[in-house]
Length: 191
Length: 151
Image (tube, rainbow over all chains, first blue to last red; front, side, top):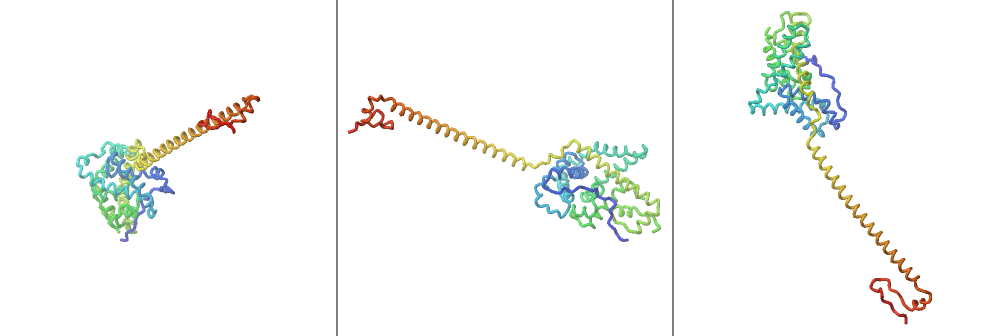
């Protein structure tokens, strides 16, 4: 078997700001992405918002050091991934926060998708499967979750994920494979 | 490859490890293709739900609240410096105006004194002129009222 890097989940075309100095434009462009990644990782709106602000603040302070070796999106995502990692580690100490999963919002999200489905049975099934993925993601290790979300929510390719996480591409594949195995098992896909 | 894909094969495929052999099998085997589609559809649904949830949550959150406190501090300093500059400039301007007004007043007083001197000199009757020629008038206050009789 000859492994080939997939490009099935192509990243969305994102307009790169010409000048990082126009930081308001950078924030406007990348805020939704950073916030989304933080929200999916932490499942807490306030924490996600705070993290997104920290991310842009850090980027703003370090903007002079940005040389453009990686894309702005990759650079910002790299900062966000580090902040999420730190946040998760800190939250572990505050055990009461672990139960603050945003259940109603999550239900709303899965409901909105179910509404797009065709038949009521199909919609219910889709909703259950999506809920199973969310539950599975919650049980993943910190790294597996980051890699999984970057791949299947943020549409980053393997090379970008490697850059963002600081892992080797092969390691990213391993984490992704394990994450998918957990998700698949949680969904009951054993056949 | 005649056998169906194993669950691990599907995960491997989705993780990005693909081979021409796997691709060919998926193209030919309806059952495996359907299993793969099902998994991909769940992942796409998960993706959409994450995007929808995030959009719903961030709708009420203004994205420009990120501005660094450093900038606010800098703005405050700038404001303070501008206020100080205005204060110093206005006080200097006021002082300058005061000085000019004083100088003008002095000039007016000098002109008045000069006019008075002229008037006084003109006020001497002709008959008194020989007498006036005999004396010299002082210009300063110390000499006021004093006169010297020419020898």
